[in-house]
Length: 224
Image (cartoon, rainbow, N blue to C red):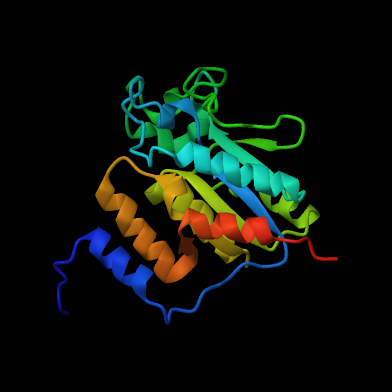
C-alpha cells in the first residue's frame, strides 16, 4: 500500500476542493448542536485543556444560533460536568487524575460553565449536560430532534477529533443530514483537527465554510 506523505491539512484541502463529491445537503428543518463551548475548552489563558480556535468561532456560533431562533429551529448547547466523586465519568475518567483531567470538571464549577461569550437564550435554547463524547449518548437529544421534526443537524464546538466527531458520526448513524461549519470547530492541535475534518468530510458530514451555512440559514424558509 502506498504511504502518503501529505499533511492532514493537505488531505483535507484535497477533499474540500473536490467539486464532484456528492453532498448530503441541507434538508427540511435544521437544528444547531453546539458541543461543549465551556470554559474548560474555550479559555486557553486559564485552562491547559483549552482548544486552539478560530478567533471568531464563538461569534460565528452566536450568529448561527440567532438565525436558527429566527426560524424557530432548535438551538442546543451541551457541556460536560461530573459528580464530586467523578464516578459518572466512568472508565473514561480513569486514564489520569490531575486538576485538568476530564473527571475533574465538576458540576457547578467555572470549568463546567458555558463560556459567557456564548449568547445562550435561556428562554428558548436547550442546554444538555452530557457525560460522554457524543451529544447523543444517554441524553434526550434524539427525542428532542424527533419532536421538532428535524432532519438536518449542524454541529459546532470542540474538540474536532473528540466530541464533535463522535456527535457527527452518531448524527449520521441516525440518518440526519449532518453539517459541520469549518470555522466553528476546534481542537488542541492542528494535526487532529484537520485529520478529523478530512475524515468527516470524506465519510460522515458536509464540512462547509461557515459563510455557506449562514447564507443557507438566511434564505431558509420553514416547510409547510
